[in-house]
Image (cartoon, rainbow, N blue to C red; front, top):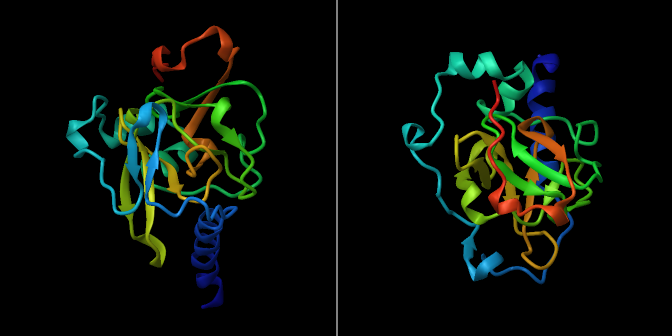
Length: 198
């Protein structure tokens, strides 16, 4: 009986760890300003589309062909990886993070910061339009799930305890991302092409 409870307890502890970031009490307003003066309401928002409304639509069999089992579990089944032992939580290279499922550029190293949670954390996506959000009531708590706006794949969650200037913390899974090192001063991140996965 106790062995059966251990996996459930581990998942709950992991989920709570992602909730417990460095608190930033100066950002209690749920309407957060983003680049370009746009507003994002992180509580109760639902900007996710129906499955067949995304630009990239694949069957589960097709996703399994292009993703590893770990990527599939996180991106398509909304899983979570272990903190501190994942690929990008302490990555300090300059470059761009792409959706690990469809290759859309979603975050850059310019907005990545050390949150202390053990997962890669960012205070802002490349543009607000590259991510979708939805209320997530799993694991006996309410969080805001973050997905790729191009394919609907699960990236992680967003919280309101991040640093200035947005006060947001996008707590993401490394296996949901692909990273490409590049000199960001020589590119316009908003104009980067998609890196298709085959």
